[in-house]
Image (cartoon, rainbow, N blue to C red; front, side):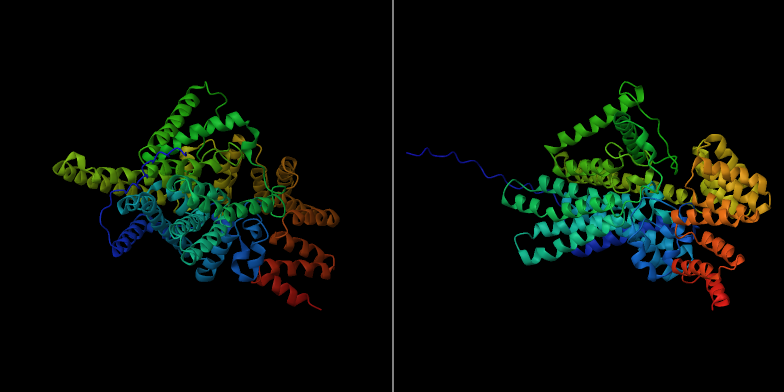
Length: 592
């Protein structure tokens, strides 16, 4: 006789307290969030193109014509600018291409696109938080804070930050559609289109910024938290396979045909061991939390002391703080899965920039918080919902609590909007930017180098040389500092002194296209055509889209009556920049 099995109660689904909301109210919430974003970031529309904007937009000749659409998908970011890097972000280049088509060289349009992308991301944050927390107010609070928080200025206030709002737009859209598809998983036809679109949008996110490859981890987290063990969870886990496959395929491509690391500078953090990188990340983790709670003293070139042992005072405290944060998530799991999700959204979002497994170019950067901070803003929304729906405190106390929360929220949002508005002014032009940033990092050689470039572009060569020499004093390993002084001296006709600086730059970095180009100019002035041709060709082998070098070698060939070879390089210029009038003029003049 079979033993009668004990019957266990079927677990009931916990329904979060929900304030009534109609569909049109979602539209109102979205409109308020978009309006708040434009209030906070409206003053960026008059900003100039600064720092990395120059090589991504001004010198990026490929964005001037859609004929280069295929080219941007087979090389690194802004390849036509001559800036060598190992970033593969074709959709970022494509967005600049669209901007150039609409606005030409006017910075207003590029900044407008950034603000519009950020506004769209803020609305998506609202949507994601609403779907996770099951309460419109949590989404509204998260979306508003995300929209106006000053930590995001680095990603929005200057055009080079475009990669962050662009990839996040696709990232969140893909996530939301996956959640929608999961909710309709019992009806195949209704679930098919959001699921397929989710995969396509994830691919777009990866093609916008590399950090998007962490996306499958968020899907697994969501499924594990919000779906009980059973056939449905297994089905949803299987549905993540295409996303994981896309990730693996992308990684293989980046390690093979799309690997540009040989020509690009190596990441500086690779010189530190695993333990130092991990402990330093704990310190950065605490700084990130502080910046989200009190966003004071924001600046671009943020640095952090390297930790070598857990017994160092600051490293030990940071380790304890980070461990406490993780413990809070574990405790929260018993009471609120949405809280656990929000905390781990922050942790997982920071992992790709932690340097723990893969060393990158820095230990800390404010714009790296653009996606992870959503978790903290979601936590704020959850806290607000908890207070306004906690009926055990009594009606009168509940009414008072709601008024206090509303007032506090207004104060926080107003303060964030004001600080963002002020911070945007630091990005107004390059002089403002560098003066503000150097104030926080006076010993940063890279800042002085770039400040020198700004003065050089403005024709203030003496000030430029002063900044370059200051950069050399702080760090003599930058070949650009020597090369840029050499360029100014070369233009002034001080050839012997220029040669000294250019040779110094080449002694630091032998494969330096700009320095090789200037060395070729010096050989030409000495009448040594053979050596000039050699270094020009070497520079072009390193940077095939180096327009000035193409003109220089074409001029040398022309001077030696090698018109056919000169024409080849003028054609190359037109391939890179189809609207280049000088190259077209030379071809018309010397055509046979």
